[in-house]
Amino acid sequence: MTKLKVDLHTHTAEDPYEYIKYDARQLIDRASQVGIDALAITNHNTVTYNTELAGYAEKKGILLIPGMEAVLSGKHVLIINPDFKTISQDRSLKDLEKIKNEKNLIIAPHPFFPNSKSLKSNLFSYLHFFDAIEFCHFYNHLINYNKKAVRAAELYKKPQIGTSDCHNIWQFGTTYSLVEAEKNIPSIIKAIKKGKIEIHTTPVSLFTMGRVAINFFLFKRLKAPRRL
Image (cartoon, rainbow, N blue to C red; front, side, top):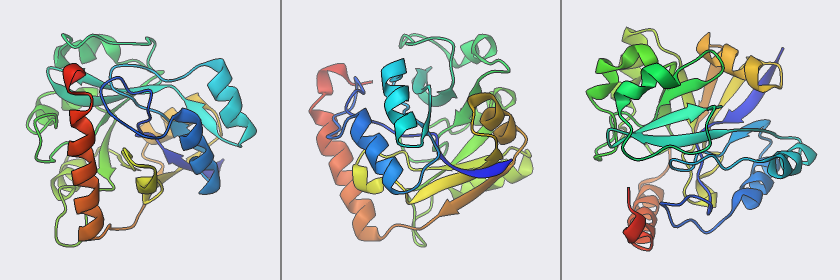
């Protein structure tokens, strides 16, 4: 076993619901530059993964893992290694019972952030379906919406996983996880479920938080007709 540098929550220009300037190959290039070993592109309601893209990542030394940020009951849920390519917007959190299996990984992303897509109390209602809780990069010493997620993970003994949730290429690499596993999808998923994770994170400045927020809301308008 070795400790793999992993990020399982990212977005690219292939996302049908977000305006993002860089595509999947550009993100893979960036991941290679910062030494990422395994990466999941988790665009909304769709899997951005094929053999050609996986091969491109492999040439860069990266294991590309299928994933998506699904919208269930209007809330975001990360599904890593799903056995489907797309999911419709009318699916419910109750469908997690059918979706969850030994081969995939269900993560609660930014569960207590102040937006309508965060799980909030739904996390507790469906807690038994979640394998891990996200520690998101978007925080600093003054503003930190991860605190409640940390308490929930500790109280309910759920692993925490650090991710970038990047919508801008310069967000990538500030928060990631070291996972003690072999460099293949089953081993990484199994290790995360067992909590063999170390979160590596650097708080971002208030200026950067403002920059991320402004970019997010401005770019969101550019795809308003397909808004989640």
